[in-house]
Amino acid sequence: MPTSLVRNWRLKLSALGLSIFFWGLVQTEPLSQETFSSVPIVVEIGDTTWTMAGAPTPVTVELRLGGPAREIIRLAREGTSVRVPVSEVGSRDTTIAIQRDWVQLGQRTGVTVESVSPATLSVSFEPAVTRSIPLSMRLQGELPSHLALSSELGMNLQAVLVRGPESRLLGLDSIPLMPLDLGRVGESDIFTLAVDTSGLAGASVVPPNVIIGVRVEPMIERVLEGIVVHAEVRGSGPQFSVDPASIRLRLSGARTLVTTMDLSLLLVSVPEASLAGMVPGEERLVRLQIDGIPSLVNAIPATEVVTVRRPADPPEDIEQDPS
Image (cartoon, rainbow, N blue to C red):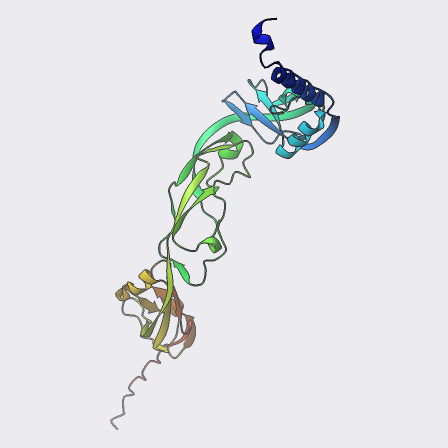
């Protein structure tokens, strides 16, 4: 025999025996049949001039799979789907027969699709349009009590490109982001929020995420004493008296905003419209109006309602009879 065959013959014989053992082990692995319920359907449209008008019917199917038990267990753990390719749209309403090779099995050796139920699905198509749609922000929760916003929330984008069914997008004036939970904010930071497309089945958004900048500072309070309450009517209208004539005003907000506030812009007054129609001697309870407060600063007056009085007209002089 050739020398190359007999060299290390014991080692080679052991490797051959081990290979035969593992081959036999695989061949004798028990086969199994399992039912996978609620397997999602994903429709992939190759015709870019069309899009789905809504979710397909049904949105999920039931699969009957067979094969080695170990492979089926792994597939159940990782999950699967049915990807339906549509290379060309022939009509708005289409019924498609589901093919077994559309089931995503990965590289599972020996796993076969024995049945798909239901065997068909219905899909409605619409012409696709692309629009630039403004974004709207949604907030939930509250900042921790020791923090306050020091500037308006900033977005790196004001609008996104949305591609989807014409009937859904033409009447859309804005598209919301997923809510930003202020309760998660502990310091100035940036947050990535996804565009909420839950009401836009069949639509795609570019980009799908937006960056939000949040700037916060320690919350402080500042008390202003003796703020005069103004009650005036433009022109040469009547004069009014106010009780109380001055109030205390408590400001709260981010430290920088409160400490740098321009007090010359502050005006506490009685709205002129609230004084309309007052006759001499009349008193009226009127709610105060506060102007000149920066955005994101809260102003809380010691009282929100004051008493306004229009003085009575002076009596006319009575002429004396000379006789």
